[in-house]
Amino acid sequence: MKNVEILTTFRGYPDDTVTSETTYMVGAKVELQDAFADLIIGKGLAKEIAERPARAANVKSEPAP
Image (tube, rainbow, N blue to C red):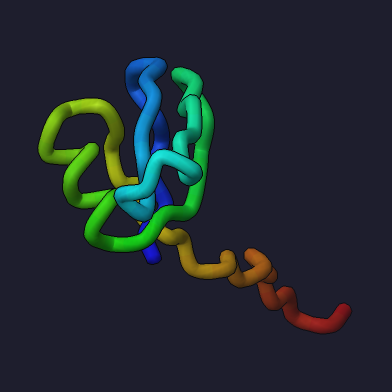
């Protein structure tokens, strides 16, 4: 699965069937099967969103008074 951001509004068929027709709206962030994500990224309709690891708390150690 890949997370992508839609760059252009379009209709797509994520599992190659008419019943799976979906309208993807510009700006939407969705998780898609790799093959479909690669296809729409290749056509310039979406861009992959890099998964960000959880940020660690920024804690500073200060000497005890």
